[in-house]
Image 1 (spheres, rainbow, N blue to C red):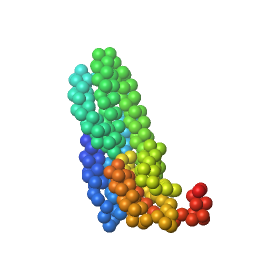
Image 2: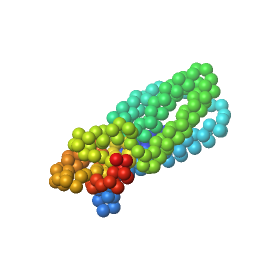
Image 3: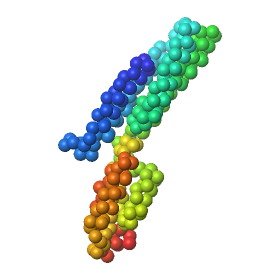
Length: 242
């Protein structure tokens, strides 16, 4: 069941990831980045369904026989999953959510190899305990991925490193950054707005060139900023703590 779930989750993750690459249009002014979370949400739904079925099977506890072929098949499965985890983690973004559940398949493989071998040679109960541990781990991963998705859906602020990087760009271009608001879109892209205080005697053309340079640099880092000029006056200075 988890192998089927993993394949479906991968196909849906790829489908929504491709949709997220589309440029901004009339229906999505800020881009399609967040469509990628369709893959993460689909993964949650699929694995929640599987977790429910597994739980029902575990509740129906009864004696059974474990074949010696079980650890061999688990070993072959682990070999395939190692490739999937390696590739998905390099892709980053929402594929990390897929990789987390796929990592559970690696843990499952190790547990199954060990518990099924012991179950075949000693007692089926060892195999059952292994299955119980894996079921609990799936529920743990469901909670972890849900929490991470909510972090992005809730438009959380970026890390301090990203904020410092943005402020450094303004400092290098000798612009007085007085207000900065940025949201973390998907862990790779950031969007926000900034206010720059300017003096009445400043050359607007020079300022515009500096802003264009900052935008271009930040856009290359996945940061899209709307930058607003605000004329420096005594009232504005007091408002922004000057």
